[in-house]
Length: 612
Image (cartoon, rainbow, N blue to C red; front, side, top):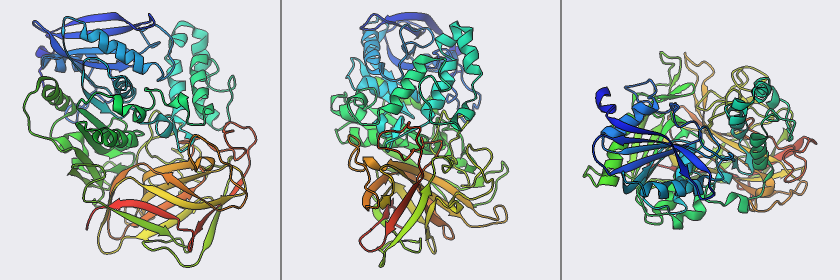
């Protein structure tokens, strides 16, 4: 990595106002290497202030966050021009911010401007995490000039309707906490102290306890721009043209994307693991040179060994998985892809398989779950095979369908939803936190009413288990649950969670039920997300709940657990069980729901496993 003196050898152009096709100008900082150009360019577009340090820009050896000038200096010292730009309507840029929707066109216009600059050699690499990853895939969908390589880190919507904004027909409520936090940082709050004061006076956690909201009656009422796009996301329940624009739906635009090298990076406890997998698979199917890296991380925390209350061992970091810190790795990637510098080939897929640790409490107070890296050529791994575990009348999971049928019932009460304890979450503070946690109600988590009670002990949660006896069971891949269900309401939800249950020990006398992945389906979408089909009272219908991908080694003595409920709040909005599509209805009803198992009702958990 460059030394500090070398990092300062650069020229900086501040607040260059780059015109977009509609005349709006975006504020852009340009860092140029010392000497004569032109140079390949690295671009990051952000709504988070182009001059503010990003919390993910650190390494294991350098745990302090790099400032923007410091970060740019690493790349300029390696001979790259670096460009940071404020998105439309944010910080120094003109225009109105409407979350996500202008990023494809603005990204295209920015790249078109860059290739015309005398200091650009015509090759542009894009980088950035989260929203900055979304901007990359959005621009790529329009095949912009100059695009030559992408590092898409924890984002880049493959389909925002099915991961990032909505999922399974439900709204991901991190959109609400994000909107509230960034409304407070908006231009309106900065320019008008009354707006700032009104937002500061709100208690977002209290508002989460008082759903449903409506326009003008929400914690965002003082910031109409932000309230407007949140309710737009909430009310647009059908998958239609609103959701298929390039900025939200890379899947619909893969064929138009230039065949440039790309890396898709995420973590098992990041909201964009599924996006990373889908983008990798979709682009590889079209002949793109793509890589996939998935670690046991929360959003952007690639140099930590832990997520939540679980530690995955010293090998869990990005540095251990790739052999380089994230700064040096990106420099090497862009040198190879933008300059043609020779290097050792890298595996197409690197995934961290969680599990295999001691199960003890470590010095930091976290469960030692352990894990190791797996390199392969495709997703799912070529050596994996499918495994179906069928839900049994006695609440076991077994590799064969059950003889004899049973209906397992639960009551879904919108006023007492099953609380979210970790998972693939970001931007959720102060009402939710991402990561792996013991699945017990805990005062740290919103909505927990009986501290210490296991989620599995709630009467509105159905539990099915598979004991791991003589040899480890290693799962790597996508996860889904097929259920035969019925309800007495025309709409309700079915939520699924996969859990690795550690046995009781001296450190954990009650064991430790560690969440792996989850998913949800709003039942009227069972035939497709472009239509709503009400449930007929008492009629048994099949549904498929897609969960997030994962990789975990279940050790002997553990139990593989599947939890089925009808809510997972506040990760997802609660279905009022009123009428299909009326997700914000003030009329809330209890629903008596059932999962049918055995005989013709082959309810099952579908996994992929590695050979023993």
